[in-house]
Image 1 (cartoon, rainbow, N blue to C red):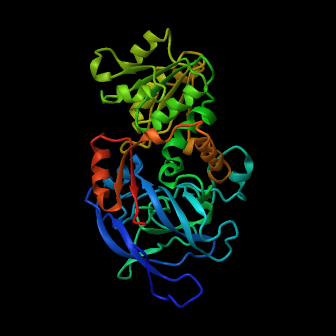
Image 2 (image 1 turned 180 degrees about the vertical axis):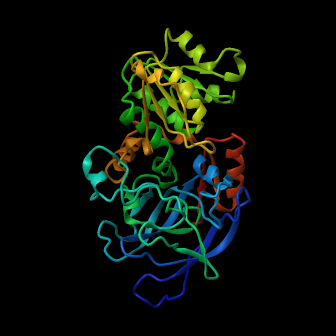
Length: 387
């Protein structure tokens, strides 16, 4: 669908109308609505969304009735690719027609965090949780003059969207946009957790709790770094065979064992794993992951975003004996600096992305994608916008 413009004779970007999948309430089916989308403000770009894959965090926020997340009406989606339609004042990095990935956490390249070399969490363009844009705390979407809120300042479940230029990454026009959208969140996060955060070593033993896209990306990263044993833990038996394609060498279903899972892992690994990764979003599982390490040098990385009970607890003795717990967002990648190299790795067949795509769906079937993920019947559903 081509956008309709309220000022088509103007040389500057105008308000456009387009279709978007709007969530009106927690857990309610998304509704295709005609929305108005403002021109890009200074340092922003407007993007024609090409493809957007559904991430578990979209589901979690959509289902949440917690007051801090229950922001409606709202347009979800953040793992996306597209083409720049127009640019705002002060934007020099992008031109109309550039191919881009959107990112849920940006990189301004000038703040203390970005220039420190110690963090990928930008002080200016970090994770946005209030449903507005970073620059002015307002929305760019509306319906009949009433605001429609954003998700992670991206909102890619729309034919067009506006993002801050620091929350987009220019990529090669030769890269398939319908595939590389997965690199704007899940696949990159898992690879980065294994490579950047844990620095998995050759010959090591790795255990991964949760074998969704992020967990399987950790497995891929660990395999590429030469881990000798990669143990996957998941309550879904269907994950067993699928996981092997990404490097998992052994599968454990906690439901099949009368023994606590941490004891199983310590027993079969002669004392515990070298690295463990919590990819579920369950703070209780973090303690289990801590207890699965090897005493003296074990390292746990937590990637999951908890739906409930964000507080965690663990006995101090687990850390006193030399174990380490680390958290990460987006696998430690600085999006603008690092994502182009991941796209190049994909194009050179050095990393796998395509196998994560279990369903390709047209935009009008977006509620089917939500159902598939809620029921655990997919890894990534890629939602394709009208051309």
